[in-house]
Image (cartoon, rainbow, N blue to C red; front, top):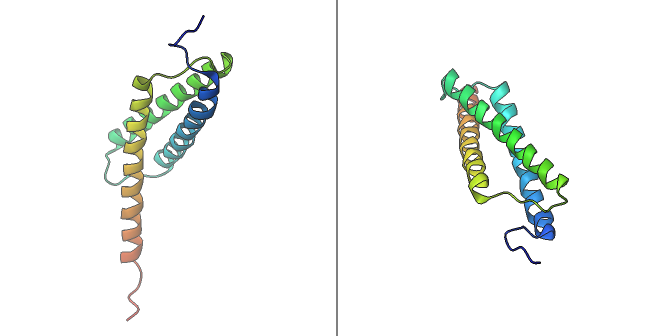
Length: 115
């Protein structure tokens, strides 16, 4: 019997697994940045809250990957789960770009004038 609500295992393998790998990669980078750097434009509580959300999302992605592996790619992840991860990554990318931009400006302004 065909069950249309179940994901196609080959599609899960080709599309969802690489997507979850990307989430893991970017959440890991974001977590490391938030753990090792101080964001001058975020107060301590804001940075700690963003780090907490990233850590939680990492755990959720890991759980999804384990479920997919355990079911032989017969489980999927609903878009209502993926979209908050995507929004969080977008927020992390914005924080990272702002941090790097400000750091670059600081380094440039601290260079001696060579005129």
